[in-house]
Image (tube, rainbow, N blue to C red; front, side, top):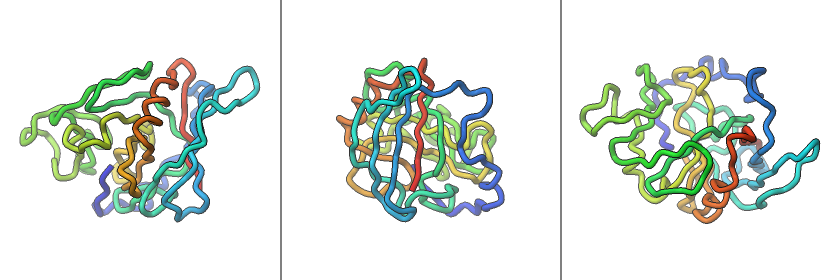
Length: 211
C-alpha cells in the first residue's frame, strides 16, 4: 500500500469505528492477531487462532510481521500507520494463483486499488487499462505492477463499510520485502500461502491489530 499526503483530515478518520464487529457481522471463528510491542514499532508478532466451541486454539505462528513505517495507530492517506482495530478478511488477490477458500482475483496491470479521495471508487478495486481509468491513477495503486509483494495478498477490510474519503485505503496482508510498509501487514511468502490455505470465509475470519 502506498500513502500520499492528500489532505486527509483526522475528523474524517474519526468517523470510523474502533474496528469492532458490527451487529450484522457473525461472530468470527478465525482470528489473526498482529501485536506490536509499542505503537511506533515497525515489526509485530502475528499469530493465527481458531475457535472450536468456546475455546481459541493456536492454528499458526507466532511469526514476525512488518507493519507501517509509523507503527500502528490511526490510519489515513497522510500517514503510514497500520490501522489499529479488528477488521474482517473477506477476499484476496495476487499476480499468482493461490489455494484458498476466500474469493480470489488474479490481477494484472489493469487492476487497481483506488486511493483518489475525490473518486466515488475510493478504497475499492477497479479494473481499467492504464491511461483510461475514471480516477486519478497517480492516486491509486496498480496491483499488477507492484511486483513480488503482491504475488498473493489478503484485503484488510478497513474503511470499507462505509467508506470514509481520506480515512485511508489499500490495506492488505501481503508478502514482505523485509522492510516496514506504508500501512499494510507483510509476512513471508510461505507464511502467507499457509494462511491463505487456512482462511475459511465460513468461519468469518478477522485480523486484530494492536500496538
